[in-house]
Image (cartoon, rainbow, N blue to C red; front, top):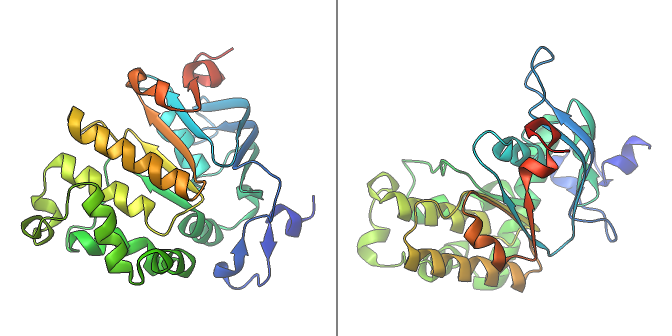
Length: 258
């Protein structure tokens, strides 16, 4: 495959903002014979023959610690690339992009809820949520289309997650509870309606009532924009809410899959 085709649409190779997704047809995610290890002397952490995720699908991935969940999400987000095989996201083969281009692609098209949240301690709650819009004009435009101003869109998402009280908005994010920080991270992933949302254990610090509100918002936002949701959790009870459930231990040969 020619490099231009592999990269989707690269109208200006010197401008990462020019990277766009394939116009139609391909699934949201496709893995073929993907293998990954941190270095050649180590055993594979990921060895997956094939995985496809349809556009707009809500996929639940379950697995115990050590089954490769976080590593797989890093591959799907283009944080790292496989040592063998292909990973295509929205029709773009990530291995064909430079690290800078992958960063741009991820900023434009993928919202990530990190397991450790990765909030910026010196930014306000609203500024943490709007951060992706500073790196992606595309997501900024989509946020403004919903609420005119990106700060207003951030507050809308925070309100839906019950984080809109003035006393809370005035707090530093480091003074929020773990569950509140987790909800801020979710709002940040959703702002600007990325085509794919990847969530790594996003409900682990939430009580039952807050978890229900969180899942309702997540599903509503994804449905409104036909967003693909890849949701990883060790809590198998949540799986019934999704379109499809996969056990990573069955999928990943490196973790004992067949």
